Amino acid sequence: MDAAHLRLLRELGDRGSVAAVAAALHISASAVSQQLAHLQARVPVPLTVRRGRVLTLTAAGEALAAAGTRVDEALTAAREAVGAFLDSNDRPVRVSAFHSAGLALFGALLRELDGIPPLHLSDADVAHSDFPGLTADHDLVIAHRLSHDAPWPADRVVATPLLTEPLDIALPAAHPLAAREFLIADDLADERWVSVHPGFPLAGLLDHLAAHLGRPLDIAHRINEFSVTAEVVRAGAAIAVLPRTTGLPLAVDGLVLRPLADVALVRHVDALARPDALAYAAVRRVLGALRAVAGRATEAAGEPRSH
Image (tube, rainbow, N blue to C red; front, side, top):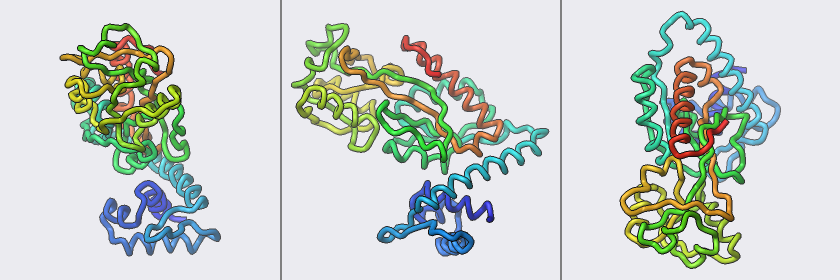
């Protein structure tokens, strides 16, 4: 069984279509299909199934793709062992983060590493289920999930905790509730809200809050970018949920953050990586630096560090 064919199967699982795999690998879609067919001819159970015009993995295909991940990890480790006498810090490391994490961590990460290894930074705000797929294009993906979200797929990615972050209620400084040290859910029942778009991690928080209140919330605006949300809150148009640690730079100029005492609002911020990416010393160095700067950001916000 060819490792390259297993890699194609994994790419199909992460990228979602033959066309996306072909574009990422700079080969033709027909070449991808031919290689997948070559692999299928050697396996007695179906690895893919067509759903409409899209080719997706079967359960057997997902299992084989996961096994291919372990093969790639071993091959990368072997290459790294051979190259251990070379300067591994020259390898650029690709890091992606959702917007508020990038705002809070990217500058500190660049200063921490001081150019060694070189970084290629990117922002990506996606639905919870799509974060693991970003590891197809990035060595490290800074992702977030709520406590009740499904855990990251351990057969595809390695998750390293960076932050366990409380989420607070963002209010305009002139709001009557802004004078309080903390709030309770009933205080907020009649407010207008800014939420994120459906499917994104923080959307579930307001659903949870509405269930606690036993009534729907008035969602007036849907905005994913927290800096834009902060401007809407400052203008007095609505209130919102914002992260305490990575959102701390936004709590200025007429915006305050207040904790909710009777409903636990928290999210987990993790670094995701394919196991074979972590075989590179440069990637491990960047991950260590990320943990250090995330720890300092947590301490600056007055919260316990994640372990």
